[in-house]
Length: 372
Image (cartoon, rainbow, N blue to C red; front, side, top):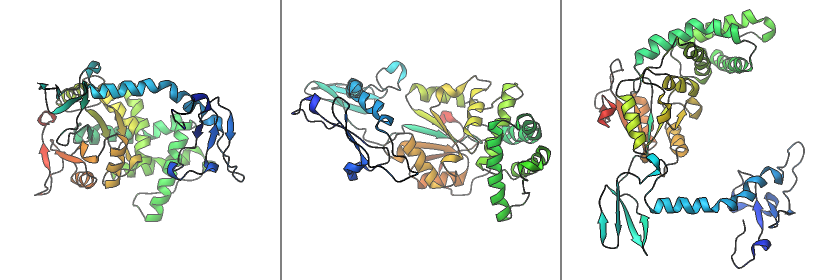
């Protein structure tokens, strides 16, 4: 909205541009200009065939409605001024808030709110506060043995049955295409255990035989690749739905998740397993459905877990001001190093069955979430 209080609203203009256009560099050819009544005064410059220029109506509903909801922004600002956060239970006052008005001060914690002309205004905290926690699964929330002795064998033993039962479905066709692309790369790089997957016209049986051979080799090598993890997630879904599988977490995990949720701390999962598999594990535990305490799930589509860029991308996605406001918990030293390089705070989880850490690794460790 081209806004100027000196200009009557009916005479103000509305400017709309496609997402991805760098706004400070916009030219007239990059935007639609509308009158206050919604009449198009200027349209985007047409692109050469076959590029289709976005229509004004593609974006009009969002922009034409935006002004109607200005009161929501006003309300959000007022909540912030009063020290109220939407994630806190019942949308009540955020925990750990210290408020003072004039010379009066009520001390409840570490975050201050000072008065200006009688209004409460939140002041930034003096130290860095972890606003989000990102959790690994295997060896952190869940015993490694559950993955290696339960989930992996179930996928390996049922891959042929699953492919035969779902071969013609869209979902499995997409899984097969992902595996084809992965195996093609593996063959070019000489990965042990890889065999060529024949074209569809070779027949369903031959295609499935080759898929099973590749998947079994990938599972044996414990490869953290999207093509395998996506298929495994679909196989495990069948197991959870038939009650053949039940998610496992350490006994201190449910209580910690509930506590963090009650304190307004957002908790996310980042695992090499597919997001669907993650949801299945936490949605079907002996403690009930724990997904109500979780805000989201990340898998290898965001990046490899041993690369700093992946953690920086996650910090951008969870809405913090800086990566240091995210606490990452993992049992893997290389993941801890990558997360720290991205600016996250890191704690290593030491659980039964985990791989021993190198000496002088330099990270804080815990044996239970109760220590956090």
